[in-house]
Image (cartoon, rainbow, N blue to C red; front, side):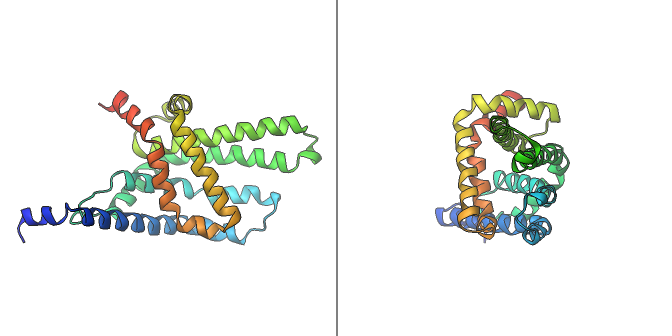
Length: 227
């Protein structure tokens, strides 16, 4: 088969669809493998507020795993004759793990502190309005963290620059922020009304949705800082 025939074979709509499905399935499998240790431990924990710090530790591997999935899906190829999603995933994991953990770890720590305070509100003597403010701050932190995760996965910036860009695009790319929040609410709904396993088995689709919801932000950053 000639090189021209290979390019023609890999350029059709069916080939592109097959390449897309294959990439998503491979990324899904690698994502599950990456989070498996923490996920298994999380399933063994009692659903009790006292276990929130342990749950945060179990969630620690999810940050680099999601970053690697974002990287692999962003760099996916439509040509079925040139598919290397596993290589892209592990490259994204290797390149981004350190930077992602510098964002992901303090975010989990903050959410854990808020969770412990809110769930022990009466014992700690925390008023309802203060608990409400903490929850609002936690929600903003999650939205900021999602932006930071996407930026760190696709670009190379210092942590403080990632923090600034993430905060700036919460407002400037507000449509993307709303789309991200909708995805997070949907993921929460899947977890609550179905099971954690349902979310785990569709994780790559949520990551793909997150990537597309963040497109305006990433396009703006690419135009302003990399071109």
